Length: 193
Image (spheres, rainbow, N blue to C red):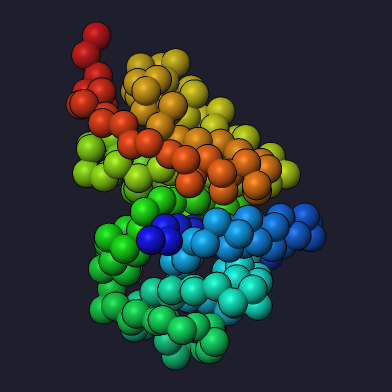
């Protein structure tokens, strides 16, 4: 049975073409493993790059979009499976419910919101999925320093930071997510001391 990988990514391509180039390579690596991808259903930015390449390869891409975004005409027209939700909250919950693993790629506020929410759910032991960032061009370096600062200052425990996989190589990231064995967080999120 193929794994469904939830991809959080931007509706922009960014200024540097390396982002789109690496997203294409990740799409190829995930497709080579027989994965399906779940994403925000967009046809623009890195979302569009991901979907276009995955579909070009004959892969199954699942889009999830909230109803209010449909009139913006950013919805990808070529998706074999599309879900329309009533709110952003139900969109995020549905995407997570369908997924076997999560990868955050470069993006903006929405991408970071989704990443930190899914990490919080993992911290609370609400799921056992692998969660990773595809650190193209060092994009997440500043966020990772902030997370380490949270650990250093006693607001986060090290096992919570360790639950986030960081990878800049698309093939290694795909291999890691396929080989992942779930670990229980065992209430390590509670900070005592």
